[in-house]
Length: 116
Length: 106
Image (cartoon, rainbow over all chains, first blue to last red; front, side, top):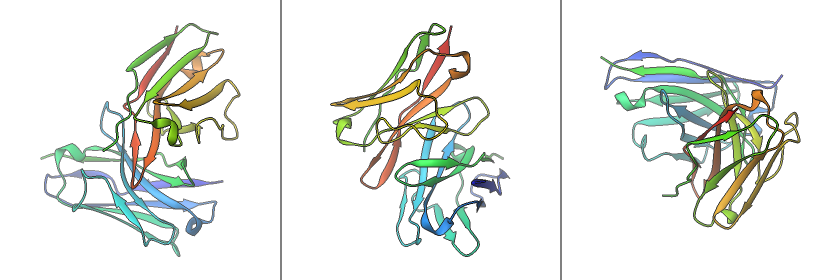
């Protein structure tokens, strides 16, 4: 079964850091591009970061540039999102999503709450 | 930046046809995806590349894209279609989502 499972969410203070992970199974991970997408409470979907299958090409939303870093370990079939200098507006459910030319498989998400 | 505009809400009578629009500058030149999201669940891809249905998505779901508007059409609407729907495009170096449309089946 094709599956993505996110982990690492939690409560963090403003200015703090958190590292999210996404474990992939059931498909050839190193053949797919990957993304992080988030959804603030009661709001719509917001794309956060993209990484190519090799990891050499990365794009980030302006809202997280310089603060968030996407990475992947193809040997471990794992995607990560290092989040630094967190702000209240980063509070959201964070989803990882597999990409062909579109996001065809999504994880169930992990919740990040930034609050003092 | 590039923006996609969706109506906040659309209502449809049970068994009738719902149409959800997604407006964007020359969106007809881009590939449009549509995602369905039910409360507390992750998004599910229902249409990709303007009009293609992934396996497992009912034929009742269809899509079109031309000019400045893409449209998701849901025929013979069912209670289980009640959800938020988001359009999406790739714009050079970033993904863009529409603001989402809440579909209510009456």
